[in-house]
Amino acid sequence: MKIILIGYMGSGKSVVGKALAVQKQLPFLDLDEEISRREKKSIPEIFSDAGEIYFRRKEAEVLKELLEQEANFVLSLGGGTPCYGKNLELIKNAAHTHTVFLKTGLEELTARLIKERENRPLIQEFDTPALLNDFIRKHLFERNYYYNQSDLSLVTDDKSVPQLVTEIENYLN
Ligand SMILES: Nc1ncnc2c1ncn2[C@@H]1O[C@H](COP(=O)(O)OP(=O)(O)O)[C@@H](O)[C@H]1O
Ligand SMILES: O=C(O)C1=C[C@@H](OP(=O)(O)O)[C@@H](O)[C@H](O)C1
Ligand SMILES: [Mg+2]
Image (tube, rainbow, N blue to C red; front, side, top):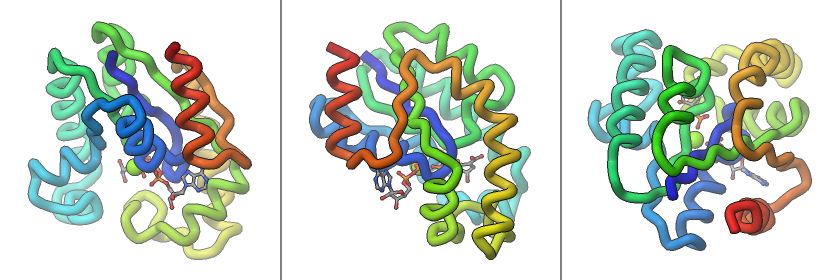
């Protein structure tokens, strides 16, 4: 079983994925961490040194490689991963994958992300809640088309990480 977490920046892919992997006793992979490790740079450094197009190329390469592994895992994607190139098609066509969309409301995303912009190059410039909220609203409009193709959509608002892990486990059983 390859469980793949999808969703906007700040929806909880990394924290929920890590907790789900512990619970399911599966290896945990975070696509951003894999890219960082291979490039020996943080995500903001990759964006500032080489640009977003370079990042998207690496993201697609590493994703493809991970999906080709035989082993089972929990994989947390970056917020943009399913929205570029053939990534979503690759994910859907890979054997034994279950995709879970962590669906977090605009206000909750804004509240979380205004405090966590430094590691997210795409939102670094939006330094007030109003500016950030406006950016996220438009961005979600473009991206929801891809996220909504997931096998399971889970509303995360007002749910704790352990609660979300339980809901995903129930779905998988
Ligand atoms: N269900 C939740 N309830 C409260 N806080 C959460 C929840 N899920 C994630 N968070 C918090 O939101 C922030 C973003 O989570 P993260 O896993 O980094 O998101 P992503 O990987 O989707 O960008 C973190 O500070 C995390 O602790
Ligand atoms: O939404 C995006 O395009 C991105 C999301 C980030 O991951 P998180 O969703 O884990 O923040 C990271 O991959 C990069 O900064 C680009
Ligand atoms: Mg993440």
